[in-house]
Each structure stands twice: as structure tokens, then as C-alpha cells.
Amino acid sequence: MSDDHRRPRVAFLGLGRMGTPMARHVLTAGHDLTVWNRSPGKTEPLAAAGASVAGSPAEAAAGRDVVVLMLADPDAVEQVLFGPDGVAAGAAPNTLVVDGSTIGPDASRRMAERLREPRLRYVDAPVYGSVGPATEGTLGVLAGGAEADVAAARPLLELWGDPKQVRHVGPTGAGSAAKLVRNLTLGLALAGIGDALRLAATLELPGDVVDELIAAGPLGAAFPGVRQILAAGPPETASFTVDMLTKDLRLCLAAEPRLPLVDAARAVGEAVHADGHGPDDTRALPLLMRDAQR
Ligand code: NAP
Image (cartoon, rainbow, N blue to C red; front, top):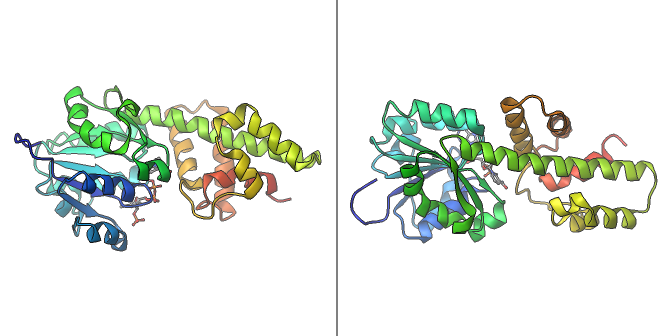
């Protein structure tokens, strides 16, 4: 980071559902912002709001103090950091890489290790909440990395979430690890509601009684908004897809294979994907489970 007191110059790579509103907060806070996205069309709204657009991750990272990644999975992060024209080829030594993607602790540690040689710093900072909280700046952020690096990243992280919701969990990979634990509970709650709905349908219980029981029961508390979804169906526009959740469950199993319920939820996610519903919002999952091959 530079020594002067100007705002860090930021590159933001990955302008999907989450990246776009998060990058917008960076711009609104007055940072000089360069953006890059694999599909170039998604840079247009931020370019219209004043961001510069780079032609590659290397070009985006050149001359920046901080490079933020908000990418789909470990392969995407690896390609954007170390592929041809990747961040590692363009960033100056001492640049801080802040990785908001959910990629699991092993991948986070691997990225940090590989960035050591070009002397780039790395903080894993996956977020929880979804597109609504990303737009409002009320995400939770789970950071892992060296004290000084997380402290340097904190002003940016606090653009995405309330300061109390921005936690330094531990060393590199700890933020990614915490994020997996958090999403495990989401996956199990959704799959549990799906099983409950299916049992209720098989037993021919009245829908309103079932909706009430589930919404007021322990899993309903774990999944706010479930009553509305049971009554009105899932949203048409996906915020957090079934495929993303299934990716997270796979990452949980990569870290600890002896998670029988996670393994079952992963298999459900993969079956939903095979039925063509992977891009659906996760809130559709219980209803898809209820109706599968009926
Ligand atoms: P998304 O809308 O699908 O966006 C994914 C981004 O990754 C896009 O910019 C995409 O580029 C890019 N990408 C994928 N593969 C790539 C590759 N091989 N090389 C370069 N870029 C690649 O996903 P999202 O919902 O924003 O999620 C992003 C991350 O945040 C994920 O790790 C997810 O688990 C996590 N997350 C999501 C939510 C949520 O509610 N959505 C909440 C918390 C955390 P293209 O535009 O070219 O496809």
C-alpha cells in the first residue's frame, strides 16, 4: 500500500451477482477503481458510473494498491491470479490481494503461498449474506491472514459490511474455513426442509399446516423467509444458485470427508443440477426436493 493518505487504488475482478454491488461500494467511497470481468459486458454499469475497464487481470492489477477478487470457485481464482495475463504478472510487489470468493481454506492457503514469490500479500475475505446485503453494504465478512494485511484490508471490508460483522478469524485460510462452516448450516437447513416437505406430501398433509409447522419450527428459524417461499414459490431471479451452494458443500467435504449429512446434501445439489436446476436460486431447493420425480 502507498505511504500517503490518499485512498488506495483498487482493482476489482469478478463482476457477478455479488461483485457488481460490492465494486459499486468501492467506487461510491471515492476510490480510483479499475474493473475486469471475464465476460466484458458486465463491466458496463460500473464503467458508466466512473470505473476504468481493464482488458486483463494483469492490466487491472498494474499500479493498484489492492486487488479484490469476487470469483466463482478455486479454479477461477487460480486462473485469474496465475493464468496468462493474470494478476501475478501485472501487480507490483507488496500489492494486497483481497479474495472475497468462497474457495475453502486449502485453496486460500495455496493462493497465498504462490503469491509469496512475486511478493504479493493475500487476505481471504469471503462474505455471507447475499445480493440484497451486498447492495445495502450489510454483508458479514470473515477474514483470514496476517494481522497487518487484514488491518490494511479492513477499510475496504467495512464498505461491504457493518464493522461488527467484519471479523478477523485467524491466519490465512481461517476466513475461508469459517465461511464453509457457515454455509454448511444453510445447506443442511435447506435440504432438511426439502425432506420435511417431501414426507408431508407423501403423507398427504394439508399444505397450510405443513407451511406453518416448518416456518415456526427449528429449521424455519435457520432459514428466514421460508414461509413466503413455501406460499409463493422461490424468486425468479437467482441470488445464490444451487450450483454455488453445492460447490460449497463439496469444499466442506474436501476439508473433512466424514460429514454424512453434508454428503447427502451435496448429492441432492448434484441431482438438482442434473435436472437442469443448478442455476436456480437456493431457495427453490426444498420445493425441487419435494417435487423431484413425483
Ligand atoms: P456469479 O454471479 O456466478 O459470478 C461469478 C464470477 O466469477 C463472474 O464474474 C464470472 O465471470 C467469474 N468467473 C467464473 N469462472 C471464471 C473463470 N474461470 N475465470 C474468470 N472469471 C470467472 O457468482 P456470485 O453469486 O457473484 O458468487 C461469487 C462468489 O461469492 C462465489 O464464490 C460465491 O460462492 C460467493 N458468494 C455468493 C453469494 C450469493 O448470494 N450470490 C453470497 C456469498 C458468497 P463471468 O461473468 O464471465 O461468468
